[in-house]
Length: 75
Figure 1 (cartoon, one colour):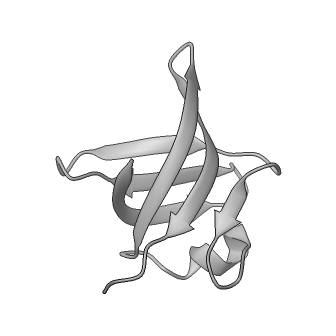
Figure 2: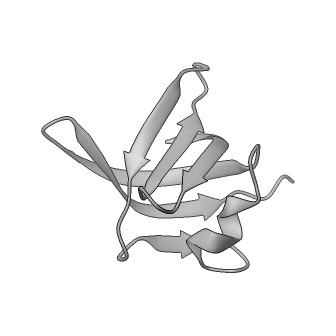
């Protein structure tokens, strides 16, 4: 899913993203998440609300688990 990063809650391990349909989507994550950004950590994404991101995830019983998050550079 591509969208705009709204929030990263490191305590709850939740990522919220606004998709192209302008709806907010929530994703859980764990320590195995692959972060593709200059800092390569979730901490590096905390201060970037509004950034364009690409999230890959698995869904099981209605729970979305993010497997990777990529900070998409504006070209």
